[in-house]
Amino acid sequence: MNAVPAAGASTREKIIEAAASLIPEVGWGGVTSRRVAERAGVNPGVIHYHVGSISELRRIAAAGKIRMFFLDRINGALSQQDPTVAVELILRSLCAGDSHDPELLLLYESLVAANRDAQLRTDIAASLSQLRRQLHDWFAEQGVAHPLAAAVTLTAAIDGFLLQRTLDPDLDPTPLIEGLAPLVKRRPGHL
Amino acid sequence: MNAVPAAGASTREKIIEAAASLIPEVGWGGVTSRRVAERAGVNPGVIHYHVGSISELRRIAAAGKIRMFFLDRINGALSQQDPTVAVELILRSLCAGDSHDPELLLLYESLVAANRDAQLRTDIAASLSQLRRQLHDWFAEQGVAHPLAAAVTLTAAIDGFLLQRTLDPDLDPTPLIEGLAPLVKRRPGHL
DNA sequence: GATAGTCCTGGACACTCGTCCAAATCAATT
DNA sequence: AATTGATTTGGACGAGTGTCCAGGACTATC
Image (tube, rainbow over all chains, first blue to last red):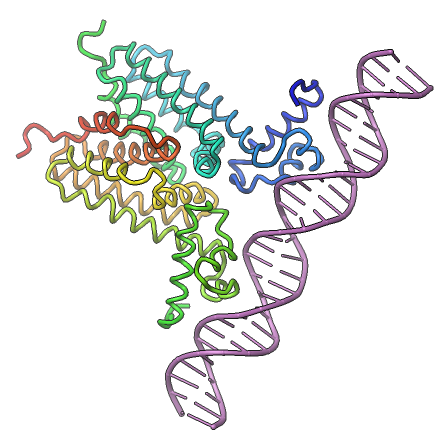
């Protein structure tokens, strides 16, 4: 189970990838062994050879995707010069794509499922708290007045807004950007 | 189906109530006909007599509870005098109870399930947009500078924060209250 | 080429699911 | 008391589920 040869790792990854792609489509509970096997082009029996159980498969697939999601989509904006610009950039970019962005749907499916899976909850909570800390440090560095309040509020607001936007694709991010702008303004004295 | 006698309505309500109480416990997909029947103290067969299908039962139960939730928990704060106080009151009250508040868990279960159920999506989107409008009107009345930005940001931030708090009960609402306070400050000229 | 270890196949197992229905029960009217 | 309609019962049906396993195939080592 520890040292997995290349060939085995390949089908294992195919299985995990298939599960991850299914979560947003059919929901957490809809990810079944047969469906995963079919999408991965793999025999149903082989799933339990590479991954212990379906619950564990869902957990592995979700946690991996979520970690990547935060790294890719949020951290990219931190290379911006101005916090206000960065916030607008994050939101515009997140709203640019489909409102049914698979990565977002996977995130929300997992967040809700985590309430019934302690291991998953721990994994996601770690990713979220790391995200908050990164934002906090960056805001502090950029001379934002209240970096902690800014990081917590921003994380929560984006999270909630995107969740609501999955229900109503026409939801306009502009008021939110306006609302968040003063929060991330630099202190007057900052160079 | 329209004019339901008293006796029938009674068991029908027992069924719906049982379903609503199960959603936060076992998740959207975990609400099965047998479980609902057991909790309602009712024969499994009778569910399809009073409610068409299990999907419809879940939808009915969820939509009703969510409408009530917004009415009870949010509107109560609008009788406050000061918007800043009201925001703090809403958050403190929502964070006072269990972080696994059944009503909140039901809301998030339903929000996620709504992505795979057009009817449910429409119902919840209506409740949410009504909530935003109520907040907007109240903020405008109270002389908040940017009522629309305030309403959208507040709704999103609270929604997201509470979702994250279901994962991490120790999450402190204070930074969020700090972050939202300037957003709902009255215009200087307001009496 | 034989052997050993890894990987895969196909099918079985026991279970739960949503839905349906004929028959039994109940309530109220005639 | 008889009749009629609404309500409830208990069980059945087929489909789908997670999990497991005996064996086949495949690959690298000796």
